[in-house]
Length: 248
Ligand SMILES: Cc1ncc(COP(=O)(O)O)c(C=O)c1O
Image 1 (cartoon, rainbow, N blue to C red):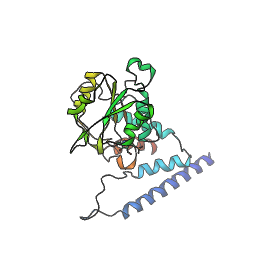
Image 2 (cartoon, rainbow, N blue to C red):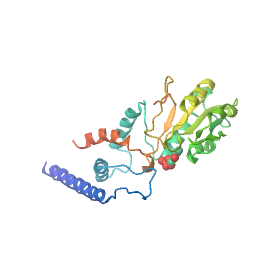
Image 3 (spheres, rainbow, N blue to C red):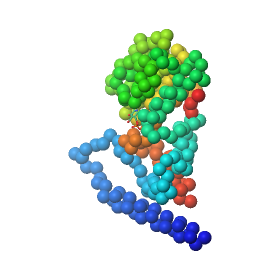
């Protein structure tokens, strides 16, 4: 018992020293003044994350552990999706999302080698890489400016008998025209894969019914996590530490 108390005491000391260190760093942060460089995004974290990080490190949890499961649960709740699975990166999430649609369990709707997948000409490499890696054929549609999202007026030109899916990213957090793209997919029986890597926390008013997309990939890369969502996921996690849309 004494041994356990000592261990817990040490842990508290280590964590509180780390939080103090974090607070020093925070005090050194300079307030923005006109003329400073404006970063389009940045790392967003506070002492709660430091606590979780140190806690996991003390147990040497370098792979998915208890925090990973909590995060999956909280994120699924936040997104209102049935299922959420952590991967090592947004690119891997995109790969898994696409590969799920190649499953033989989907019968005629499964994406097969040689099938076509509609995407944009100006997009992120790992939105389209899984399509090429698998041996399906990407069909590129132009984007429209200034949104950098797909030009929906060109969608029907890209359609053929071999079209099976549409794979699109919300460029730099700007949602593409979900309403039009979803209606197009529904009309032609196509899967919609959303690469949401840049856009966790972005909002779009969607008046349609049912889930917008079948599968979606998200990146936790620091530049893409937005201050609006992380505190809400974190709040749930830290409360515990301090004391799918998928149709597949
Ligand atoms: C649209 C888009 N998709 C996928 C990714 C890949 O995410 P990750 O860096 O987590 O692999 C990124 C960013 O890097 C991205 O901007």
